[in-house]
Amino acid sequence: MMEQKSFNVKKVAVVSHNYNLSNRHGHQDFAEHASQIHSICDGEGCDTILYSLFTWDENSPIRRNHQTIFGDLKNVRCVILEVGNKKTPNKFVEVWLKGEELPRIMEQFFGKSSDTHERKREFFRSIPGRIIGDGLVAICGESNIANYMPSNGNFRDEFGFNGELERRNIRVVFNPLHDYMTRYEMKRKRAYYSRNQRMVITVWNMGRGRESSIPWTVFYNGEDITARVREVSPRINDRLDIRIGIVPEIPVMTLGQARTTVIRRRPV
Image (tube, rainbow, N blue to C red; front, top):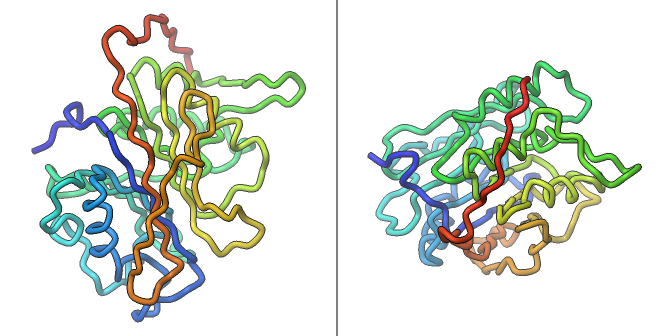
C-alpha cells in the first residue's frame, strides 16, 4: 500500500480532447481509449496522468477499476480523473494510486471568485484530503480561492491558501478544468500559486469555442513554462483530437533550497 507521503510527483502527462465528439459507445469521454492513453504515458516515463474533467461517463460500459486503470504499467502511479458527463448533477474526482485498490474521492466546492465565503471555507478545510504525496488537487474554479486586484497587481488571499501550500510543502498543484477559462486573471493566479519553486498544472477540454490552441498551461516559480510542454502524437484509432502533453520534470528541492520562511496560518 502506497503511503501518502512516499509519493513524490516527478513527471506528469496532461490529457485533453474535444468533448463534443462521441466514442463508439455514444459517450463524450476518454474511457474507451484510457488503456491506450495510459500505455503511451507510461512509455514516456510519467508517474502521474492528469485528465481534463468530464473524463469518464458514469454510464460507460468500460469498467473503472484498479486493473483497468493500471494494468501492467511500470511507471504510472497516479491517475486523476473525473466521473460524470456534462449533464451529471453530482460529478466527483477520483485519484487512483497504484498502491491503493480504491480511489480517493474529491468534490468541487465552488467555481467562482464571487461564490460564498462558506463554500470557499469548505474547500480550504478539505485541503488535507486533497494532498497526494507532495501534490494537491484543486478542481476547476477552486483556483479562484485568491482574488487578483488589478488596481495594484496584488492578490487578496484571505484564506492564506499560498501559505497553506508552503506549510504543507506542496510542490505541485493539479488543476483540471471542464472548459477553457477566458478571464485574463486566471494565468496571473496560476503564476501566484506557483511561487517559491512550485508547479501549477492546468488542463481542460477542447470544443467550447473561443479557446486557446493549446489545452493546458504550466507555471513554475511564477513563470509560464507552457511552451516547454512536449506534445506527443498518440494516434489513438481515429481520434486525432486526443492530445497528450508531457510536462517538464518537477525539480527536486534539495536540503539547501528548503524554504525557511515562517508561515502563519490565518484563521478562517
